[in-house]
Picture 1 (tube, rainbow, N blue to C red):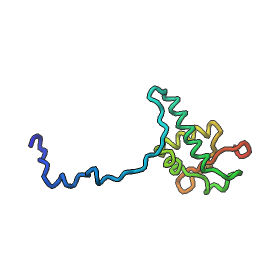
Picture 2: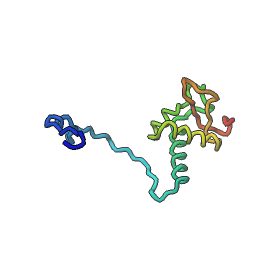
Picture 3: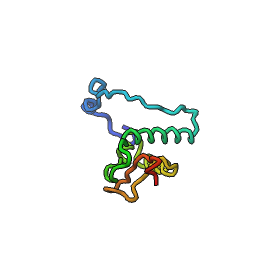
Picture 4: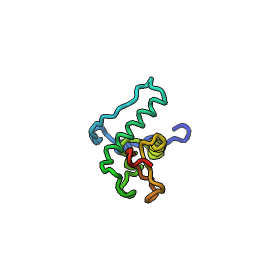
Length: 121
C-alpha cells in the first residue's frame, strides 16, 4: 500500500467484465482515411461521406417544410461524428452551395437539405 492506494479487494475482481459477458456488436464497414492522407484530404473525405448521408435521407424535390428537414444530430449519428464537427462540415457544404440550411433553428437544431439547382437559394 504505497501513496495511499488501497489494495484490491478479492471481491472487486468479480465486478470486472469478463470476456464471455461482453456483448458482441456487428462490425460496420467504415472507410478510414490512410495515415499518409493530408488533413485537407481527410476533410474532403468527411465532406463527401456527410454529403452522401444527407443525400440518402433527402428524397423529396422540391424540399418539404423546414421541420421535415434532417437535423444535425441525425447526420452526426449516421456518420459517427460529433455534432459540432458535423455542423462545421455542413456549413462548409453550404458555402459550396451543395446543401441548404434553415434560416433559423427549429427545436434548437439547425436543419439541412440537399441543394438542387432549382432549390438552392
